[in-house]
Length: 251
Image (cartoon, rainbow, N blue to C red; front, side, top):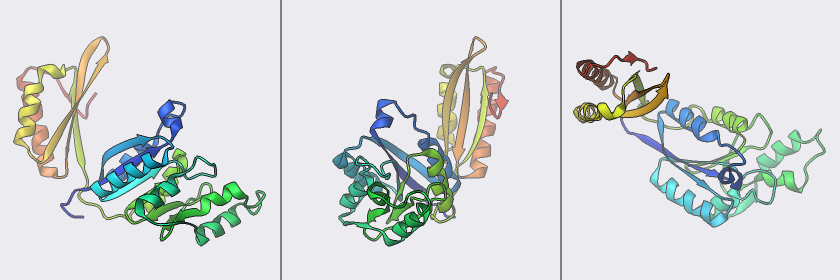
């Protein structure tokens, strides 16, 4: 673990996400998993099943971050074009990965065998490694700092589990929360001043309406445990001085 802040980008691919037909769950689980690895999710793009759009997003985010993840578009159908797009972005050919083919042949041996559609899931950019998939056989793909994963959340979760501990990360992002029936507009100056006095901390304000009353939870984040505790103490002290009741841990 180092003081460097490692970041990742995520490209969520699929017309079904943009149409609202499918509700994305991968952003949250990828972000949560990355935090445990000491990596921050820095930017997410949701793009349609259009190759040039995927290429542009992949090239932009892989250049801006230590890691890039994609979800969706690596299945057996004609509109699963993520492999083609990533290969184009990296300037390599698409091949039938021999290890992926062997995995799929074994997986489908008692399910009717490989057909044209199933074989598409053995396609990979030349030079790629595989990410194990214990759920449905078809592996994910890793090439350089780019990781191609399934769009189905429980399959994505399995691929993330297979990657656990394999990526270099930095200091883990720590957090503390304090909340109450406190209108954020009435403490905006306090939040700004406390954050300014603790340059290693960020304070997020998350308002809510509950029991007919307005309230907020304030989440402090930092990679420095001492700075985090100092910021939490000063914020709570300030809320008390302004006459607000508050609850550490949030409400």
